[in-house]
Image (cartoon, rainbow, N blue to C red; front, side, top):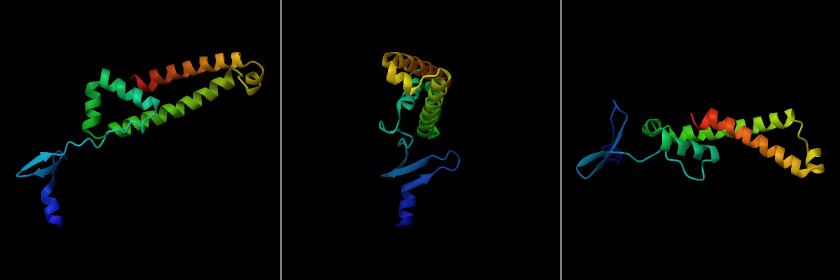
Amino acid sequence: MESEELKERLIDKKTGIEYIKKGDYYFPNLVDSASVKANELGKYGKLRLKYLLEHKKAEYTCFWLDNKLRSHLLEIDKTANERFNLLMKQFTEQENITEELKATNQMEWVCRMNNIKNRVEEIIFNELIYV
């Protein structure tokens, strides 16, 4: 049984491409093992994917062909989320935005937090997503 399975699948040692036998012919296995499920990526991973597809098609193709697209997008998403949380914490401490302000003046707190969130996202976009 193993020899039959080996005959059905071949791997080219030079290129590393796997071939599957269909009838009398071998076809390259072009199943996208690097594909990412929609629910697997967060906001920043999806933004990076969109940017690669629209503006960096060669880079997208290289990631896809090397089976590194999925890991790249997941790494960008994870790094961006960690950076977002760190910067939000740093900016709120730096500008002395506390729970006391939230309790006493909610509109001021919301305004200042939105301001910080927009600045943090701009930093993330410039450093991680749109490069």
